[in-house]
Length: 110
Image (cartoon, rainbow, N blue to C red; front, side, top):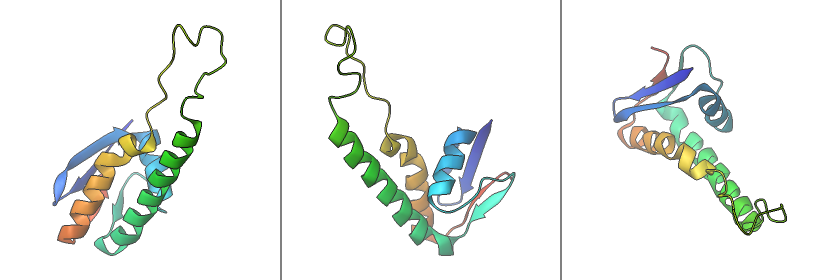
């Protein structure tokens, strides 16, 4: 299922339900049929998401080069590491920042 986040300060952000649930969990919200991130909550939400992204980047950097290392055939066919949280969360983080700048709420399920 797709979830569409809407805000007057930014274009809509569309994402799969499992990613929406994960990102909302990071900022302390629950994914329900309808919801809102009020402009009063945005500063804390942005900070929490930025910390989670920084942590993910740090952990990925520590493990860089170790993804599938040691597996048979690794040298001939190295695998790319999966997409990180920064790439997956960027559109949502961008929306949070735009909404914060214009003191707008973000809604979904409407």
